[in-house]
Image 1 (cartoon, rainbow, N blue to C red):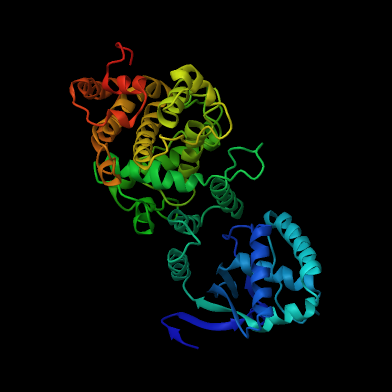
Image 2 (tube, rainbow, N blue to C red):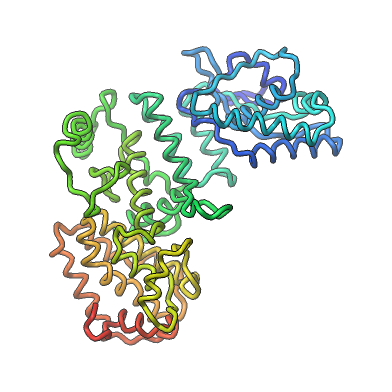
Length: 491
């Protein structure tokens, strides 16, 4: 067995893995969540390999942490596949001559029950001899087993393993990092954070439409409204978010075991202590300022802001959940009454340039239809999408800082500033937009009140004096007049 530092790696069969008596799913792991589709794919791949007469089938890798404190091997990566194989073994009714006895939290029970029933039904329909099939799984199917003594190195290897392929988006490399920072939190709190995180990756915007795809809101906000907004606010070139930029969302840990190390961390320490005090003493008795005029829901944290210094652990998950919820309310659930005026404008001017009979009122009403959050051609063109994301990020930061009042006052001004580029250039490139709005973000991020945003109005007023060479790119004269400031003074 080759050994590199404190890392051991070798190839083992599924049968050898299931003979490990001290294998454990650690408390920080997410619940078992594989869907029937995931399970079916694994079962069919194995069956195809067996029927093809292949002597070996590599399922993947499993990363284990040698937890000497509890004398167990904790599963860091590979839990979903191992749990499925464990259920398969049980469903095949093979004599219990293996020492593996994985235990699962209550959050996994419903999925385990559902997938166990599915596996039994699949075996009945597709396999003549479950014993022969399971014997192939145990003896011919294998894993690369990696055992790491240091938990930090185990997570780093997990990041590396998944960062090279398509299994995880860049943002998902942050989840294990921040759950690991929650050492002072309960297992229940870790599970809640994980559940909220996973739900945001599978948000169903149209529950009444069968088979309509879910939306990965986390990918959206990390790629655009969080990462690029933070970079733009520093007036830097805002390129694509990838795993090489995840340090943007790694900060420092503050709790009784991790005091502030430097003076610049004191504001975050104060926020941490204030939030704890507010949650335990003041919640329900002392009101904070809401972003939404009718009140923020329980998923929105009043103490976070987009450009804040990141605090590791639970605070990070609260930060993310806040902006997941705000994004849904602003840009997905656009048929709802909340932010009604802005949503009418956003649909008509960002998602649907071509209004029936050139009637803006009809366009505004169409926003209440299912899937109305998806742009219509020509608003769906690549260059228009670049501008739309920049505009969304700009109003996102404005709303985050000054709430609904600030949004209602300046969303039209910001639109004119961003979309003027659509009238200037025949082609809107990603590289152009990556640097274009930085000054606008800086004005918002440094403003102390709405009066400080008057500079934006001055910039928008200058648009009427510009020369535009690509006006035909938006084939709607009402929008063109609005951007250029020639709509009879109505802005």
